[in-house]
Image (cartoon, rainbow, N blue to C red; front, side):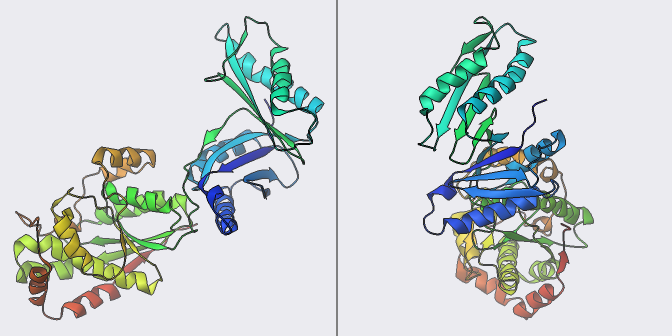
Length: 405
């Protein structure tokens, strides 16, 4: 087994930042340390557009540690790609020997089941004082790889090789690796302003949360239930979804809000066809007050244009009118199948698809309004005596579910 002593991390969009790049890099490495907290005694170093991870004592990573890295790195927003490899002194003879020895193991394993294997070499040389150019080094290393095998066993394929050998040569060290594994991209969570996410047990809102964290926003969450009209399972479902989403950030809080007292007043006093819009306007007002209290800069929803009656342009305009706070809707123009694909990717789909009643189904209208006017909703809200007091009492009774680190 080849022993790897270094992990090379490459970021994409962070590299396009100007004088404030260090802010994004610090968020990036802080999140990395949190995700890799189960790998002990790490030293993380930033060097000219790259981040290097090593053990403090220079020891090699165990097989279990490499598996942990591969499990956690896809959750590191800002990461374009990464490679697990070997770092050593930047001397051509040493590079040649390392490549010859390690490539033999990779290729021999593949030749157990076939007669021929293709390979490619790529050298990136930032050390301009190095005696060979990148092209010359590639030729040398190709000879190192092929010296262990016959011409029939080994072929060159620069486009889709079965074995890829990468090498970075810097002033301080050389680095050899055999895999370039993908990260999620985006910006490091925490590098942008924090947001309060409205989350339900459906497919859309967890995906919206994921996409917003990918743009650098740390999230807390608020969900609405209608106990006793909705079961405990509706809360448990959201708790489980937030548990998954929190893997991508330092764990946010989940606020549990019982909307049933307000919904009963709507049922008893307001036009049936406007119930859902009235619910949504109340949710926004409650969420805004919670967001201001915990110093969050915007609200986030999983709404998409035209997906349900409350998500027509007219109705979203009426809902937006209920609050002065910015409302983020990252799924606005997305197709439902694309949203489902992302939910599979982030492993929320299996929980989201469970059929459990939520607050929007309580006293749901038989024929909801698809178009509404602000003045008409304000007339309906005026029918509820002490409207603001009712919402304040609901806010006072909000419970907080805190997740353990």
